[in-house]
Length: 407
Ligand SMILES: *Cc1c(COP(=O)(O)O)cnc(C)c1O
Image (cartoon, rainbow, N blue to C red; front, side, top):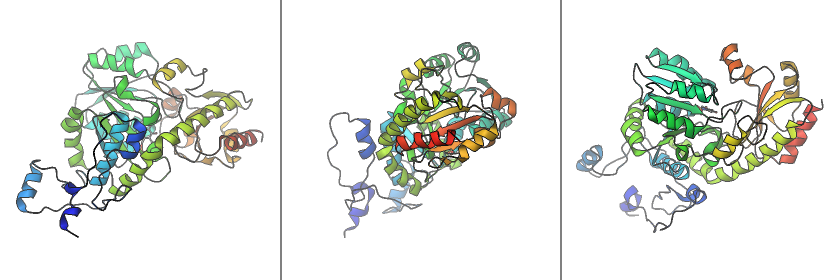
């Protein structure tokens, strides 16, 4: 076999379609770089380094004169396939993959912040994001203010002074509060702030923050993007100027790199993400409707139900209600535990966005690190549960909930 077929630059390339393809097509095709063997599926380049045909090629590669992979902390062919594919689905100019959602969250902010900067964030958020904003960044002289999701006057006040970045989680985890991305982005841009949206709960399938005015989107790819409980990963998407000007110089040297193996798992996950998330969201809608009328359930929080306080806004910025339901159980923590323990299809777990349906008691697990006051501010009482709806038959899930509730 001749040496040339091994090289990244000698991939047989077919003609690209001359029309703009749908995201579902991008999800299966975009970013595919075949090795020269003509493999159908994406190849796994599980290697840390790369070689050069001569010293001049190495020198040129390091001065960006040629398009050559250098080292897998900077970039890797399998990771690049995942990044290109996700960027095409999201409609973003570029994407950087990271080792976890938290690595993505931290890097998305840390690459633009310096001591003395002020940030504004939505009050209800994933507990580790809350720790980064309220405990870690303040140690380095970054001040913050939290605003309740639908407090318009609060956002107006917080964004009437100099702000470097706005961090929004919508819908929020676990109680699915909705922030008006367009409204907050317009206010933020007037004071020169960069708007970052944690789009984990909606996934790239149900909400497009960049189209709604945000500058940057971040994901825990551990959730719906893998969606099958296998790998940890994250991603940050935005404009060329943010990614090349701010983010890449930061991540290249601090090293929150995604492994090629995990990227290979994820590039295949993206092929089925739209099918999975659409089905999971359809089932979640039916389950939310079933739970809402049940006497053992005090209230149901789901963006696809008219009882959600921001139902109209959710309908405007999301294409469906999502895969996660917030449940307030009528009864004590002990009774909520008894209900969870009686489930026989749905697993008890702290993850979400998975093909397996999972139920969580946030107050004792995921949000446990927050003070009781902060928990209450987010509406997390001891009887709140979070249900992540998976891919099992919706009839079996409703039956499982019904039998556990009639205990
Ligand atoms: C899980 C999650 C994260 C963190 O992602 P990891 O992959 O666990 O690091 C951030 N934000 C939200 C909303 C999440 O659900």
